[in-house]
Amino acid sequence: MNFTTDYRLENFILQTQWADIPAPVQERLRGCMLDLLGALVAGSGSGQFAAGLALARRAFRSGDIAVIGAADGPTAIFVANTLKSQYLGAIMVAAYSYMALVPIVQPPVIRLLTTQKERRIRMPYEKGNVTQLTKILFPVVVTVVAGLVAPASVALVGFLMFGNLLRECGVLNSLSETAQNVLANLITLLLGLTVAGQMTADKFVRPDTLLIMALGLVAFIFDTAGGVLFAKLLNLFLPEGKKLNPMIGAAGISAFPMSGRVVNKMGLAEDNQNFLLMYSISVNVSGQIASVLAGGLILSLMA
Image (cartoon, rainbow, N blue to C red; front, side, top):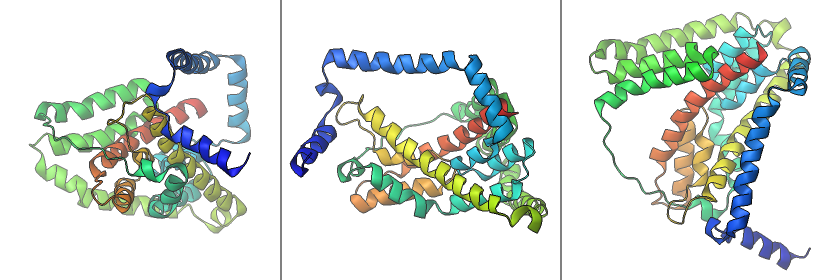
């Protein structure tokens, strides 16, 4: 395949819209996606799935490491502690390290998976009004739904939503300010001291620690890539003018608000009038909730 053929193929892939695909092919694609989802659901109850899960539990116990990819420190600590992991200190260091390295790790992955044209997609913002009742019901509904989907995640998502409720109810300003500042700093200090007490030389200074850091980096990269690729998949079904900027998919992690800011900064670098902050921060908040649910699902599978 020569350069001209490569260029034509790449140009065809980038310029093809969902509307350009013949109707029979669209129907076939929808059918394949439904078949895939059905196979996943059906396979989860098979003997092979149970055998594979048992092998993963016995040989790897990787659930406490997998959640690092969400770049969520509290969830990683909670999952690792619940699974009684001997690598709690290393997992905590890895999770918080990748939260701090978001501006370094994410941009190269995003650029690798997107074209300049995609990074310049504008998403106009339309201001809307949210009622006080909606703001109060949101944390309650999220907690209930999370409890139904992943009961093990209620402890984490419940506290996250409780803080949201304190702020939005409008009558507990003193408690809300204390939770956001003094209490949050105090808990962070105590958490750091508690975990640091377990980071003795015989448990931390070992090759396994480097392996956990490497696995966490791989998980974080795949998390970022997955968000970008999923946004590109959605664009296949969206009409021209309503397409998503694929970069916002990378903000679907729990590194709030760093990831949302990084995506907005990259959008402005490509087009100084392309403001993606509202969208990227929204995705970032969703990533916080999703990471807690992921932790709950891992506990349900691995416990």
